[in-house]
Amino acid sequence: MDYFKTLSSGWRNGRRPRKNRQVRLRKNDARTLSRCHAYIGVVEGYPGIDEVVGALAEAKPKSKTRKVLLKPFMIVAGDHALNDMAGDDEESWKSALTAKKYQAIPLLKGLGSNDGFAEVFVNHIRDEAKEAGIPLP
Image 1 (cartoon, rainbow, N blue to C red):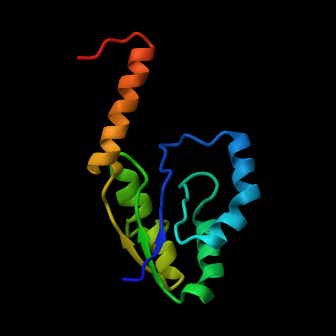
Image 2 (cartoon, rainbow, N blue to C red):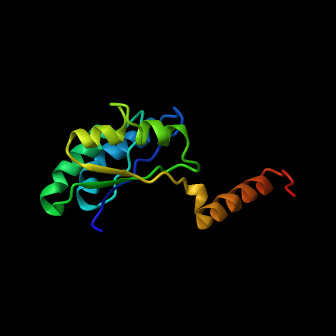
């Protein structure tokens, strides 16, 4: 299938990116978003749904696809993924994309359901605990 992938990610429970990170994203977003088929956006912050929809519109003449796969970039696909990303509320990403005539397809699986990601995550916790002198079983 020819999906135009949108990674609806960064549902970071209200934590905002640091200012210098936002500036770096702003300088590189047009170049980056126009060359790839995966877009990362955040619910509250930059880049948001408006920037992702704009990037999709720019890429549309090249791709001709109207399908968008929404994937949460979170350990668990919980309330933010269910409501803010894939909900039927008019403010959800799914509804915003549907209003622009895209077929939004939510994939409600968190990164924690991926064994490879889970292993990396646990190893990082183990390394940080060891460095901090915190014994783990």
